[in-house]
View 1 (cartoon, rainbow, N blue to C red):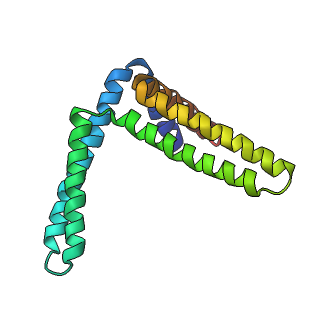
View 2: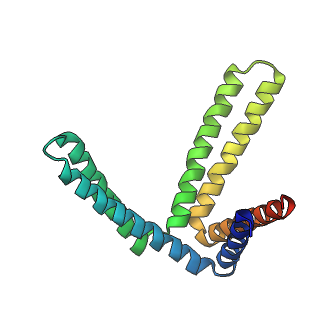
Amino acid sequence: MDFRKILGILFIILGLIFVIYPVYSTEAVSWIAGICLIAFGFASIIDGFSVWSMLTHVSLLDILLGICAIILGLLFIYKIDALSFIVAYQFYLIAFVMIFVGIVGIAFGFGTISRLASVLILILGIIAVFCAFYSIAQPLYTAILVGICLILEGVTFLVSGIVDS
């Protein structure tokens, strides 16, 4: 069986799990992210102590990064919903970049089409801010949205694997 077909089937199954069980899937993502961050934190601390004598300032940064990663990992396990946290801040980052590009394009764009595109980018940036706010407020809808995206990607991989065979 082709790799794309297998990946498509796995994405569809994972997407259905996210859509059918959004609470459990968001908790699983939080646990996985938390465990990975804690493991990264410990590895970073060990790495920091291992090169302490050669690079003290870099070692100190490694140790501080490890401590921060462990704290964030514990927060993901016990307090924060990692999926909505990550998605929301990606929306915020994208939104502010789009708003900045839209304003710069309106101020310095040449021609009507360039300024019209900049206005559309600005509007999409404002919509992205609302999406970020909404994904923090309703993490279950974020899980359902991720599930739908996984299903669509799975269908795309499955179809591309069938067509290319």
